[in-house]
Image 1: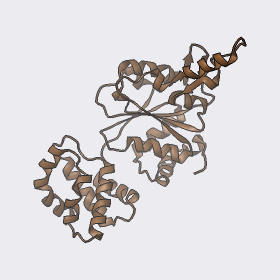
Image 2: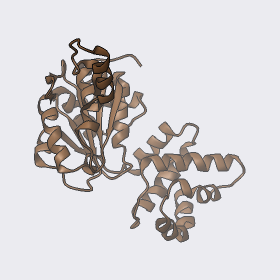
Image 3: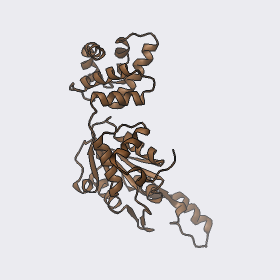
Length: 293
């Protein structure tokens, strides 16, 4: 897809929704409005929601519609500047010093600098979209490290000085809300909570992303998944699992398994926790039959 100017895409929330749909992502009005405002205000977009509601997919769709590379920083406990910002290639610096002998050499030249996701985006903000994924998995120290970047889109390297983005980068942060994020981080962002879609929207998403799944199958899957999510499960199925369940059941049906047996046999792509599976299995037949009715 050719690169599009962010201002061209974000002429209105409705235009954003149309462009996202062309990238096979269905955004409701509130999400498309949040994306529109984040782009137009030049602020990071913070997306919170349960696992599997489409937060990461939204970032991928934004990058795709803009024709930019998605740079993904996956957060985890203990992540630090060396993984997020930059680090020096010490081995290469030592080799260069040895080869230089008595000649002067700048060991802090670009060729010795290993750019990590944040620096990669600062260097080419119009070619890349930054995704800081699952920021809630990191610690408060890492959040503090992000503040300079999110405030002024710059980072300070002691040996080199301050590096600033030549243009406004597009940054998306996601959180599963396993812990509360710092207020200072939230204030720098446009915020949006993504919930599970209703049955009609989920059926539309399944049909859009599951290929040759029939409309009736998509609607049955969406209805059944809504019922299953209402149960007290440890790991409720996300949208991606619903799509895969529709695909798997369709494959089994085409291979000779009749409905609703195809749904029951494919349950392993929807429920991926032993206790959840034991809990839902006795009810699964009734849930599927009601969804197919």
